[in-house]
Image 1 (tube, one colour):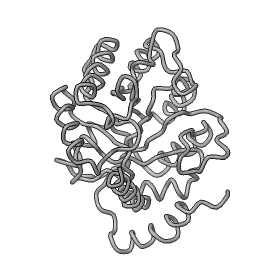
Image 2: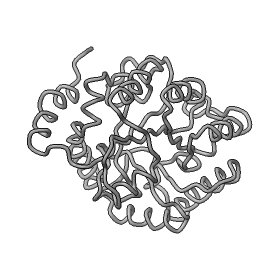
Image 3: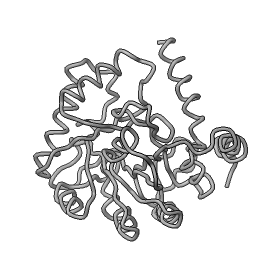
Image 4: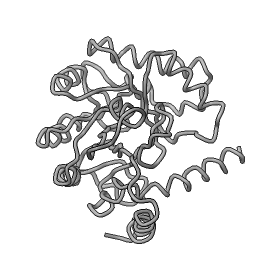
Length: 280
């Protein structure tokens, strides 16, 4: 494996210090996957890759199973963090963008370990026949209904997958409400979870408050973001932190992420957003 600074820092500096100083405070890892395919993302820095090969996903799921993890929903994670006690190892598995390769590659692996997952759908790209998003076929409504009968949950990832912070308030409202309605109309049950697309603009406090109010008004009860880290009790349940995953996450790094050893990157992530916000 080629040199990767975030991996080296996590495994040999941050995670050992974190364990000795902080111990194991209650937290739930929410894993963020996108496409599951044998795709070569050569030339792209490991941190920015979004594809995970089926073989790497299988290794990740085996590690969770071998180490006693059970899988829970986003709603269950919020409930446990806010009102319960974490007496067992649990994780939330999420997939953004609704790619069709979830049906072909991810679901069989999850089924092998009897793991659940939540898939977040950009509904403009979900139809009766496959529609492409970023050059890849997305799930169809019939596949989604079939997956739902096997325990896979679905949430909103907006309608058209825009960077919401660039839109006016009415457009944000339409993206949030219409995506929820489309999923509910096609699966016949309520949708209560939302995933923010692209980098989460946490430095933009007024926007985040507007977004939260809009989600509540639309009937959502929880959500996830692209902020890096394990989810903890003090977090806003609408913008829970997640752990980005891709093919370059070997088992030592994957395990460190589960333990909270990758959380240090959130500070770097936030500082970068803050600087860009001030410069704009």
